[in-house]
Length: 369
Image 1 (cartoon, one colour):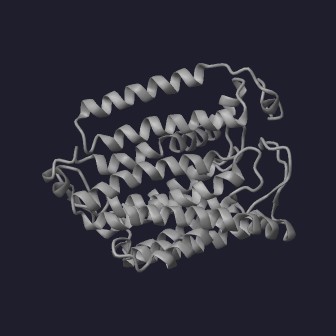
Image 2: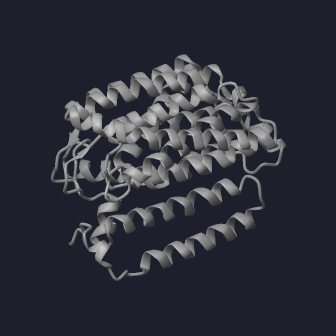
């Protein structure tokens, strides 16, 4: 655990330190987000936060490579994840500067998923009638689909200062807890790589948040949202698609379906937002890639919440779904149920409170109906 904590802290510190320099570079090169109708921010803000995250990831990889425990997590799959992430960051950098069309980005995301496949990051089984091994003709398209959905779910949720980074940090923490316990306590060596990747995810998000929380000094941009989405997807696939569910059941670690249910739980809020946006736009006769102001965070703000409070509400909902599901793998279901009940009550009470806006809060933009 100590080595993973070191990894997390290194990623956080490096990302925190380099972000101001990346911000200066983005401003000099004109990589600045303009004010669009769908946006909540009112001040042009530099992008390329994903570059700082990538630097935090890359330097951390280099520094912890020789640690005794973490070093075992550096597999062929880890190399593939790093290369795919690097490709997406480069694509995101171009998009943040020149605003590529949706189909070009989708093609680039598919290529990144292809890199993962080349390095063995793939879904190999599904819990259907026990365990059903998937042939490449099914496993590979399914892997690409999961990668694309996760990347775009994170991208869609990136609409408020600090929102995506906070939600991904919470999701990564739930993933890390599950993967770490499988790898260290129960000896599932295949869970080592997801533990490493999720520790870095948490670290870069924590390091980036002070610069990205309201009022944001820099946005992560598509370079950041696509990076985080790919890392989450790759961690989920490496963990849930390659560990034998029968082995998990033998160790009495919870339902066989949990390894596949956990990704849905930790990304529940972004996925709900993504699919509801697609359905909403298709019903309106619009492209699913078009923009609007009907995302979950827009609706919460219209209820009279500031940006900061809206982000906190969505943090709480993410944690309320993710952590009880993760806990259920290692404790009796009634314990996970109690945790869920407590978190649910706390989250609802927090959301129902109507804060008296302080002077500092009045400067935040609140959308009115």
